[in-house]
Image 1: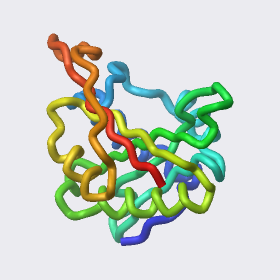
Image 2: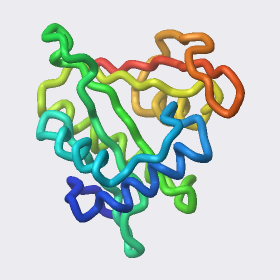
Image 3: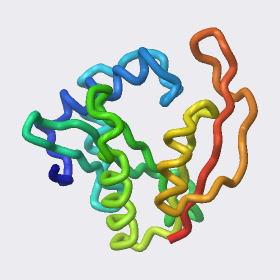
Image 4: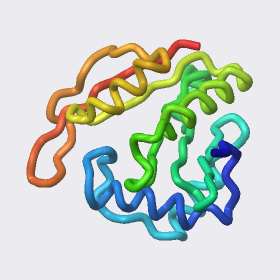
Length: 161
């Protein structure tokens, strides 16, 4: 398993993994699959400060992780939001953990101060994964998402580097 910086050639697989989550889960509150044009713009927003990494094995890309700008207000400049997704056929193999460890190391090198995770209230596996990597639960936003005909809570977790 190799963790590396994403290349534009990886974008189709990254998008497939994400679109699967859009259609089949509440891991994201997006409700409409992303187009490649949209994803290209998203891809180029991932700079050195806000990296996009992929996990690659012999079968190709099996997961990805990114840091994104938390807010465009200057005082939030050292805060980022984490997103991590693993292909449905490769979950439970420790890939998400490896991706998170690597993105945390990137954040430290870029002198970020804190990483925020927003996790759907039903996703105990993701909560556990983030806790394992030093994130602390800081609260919940009740019924802020509506997907699959139900309201969904969001847990906020934070890692101070």
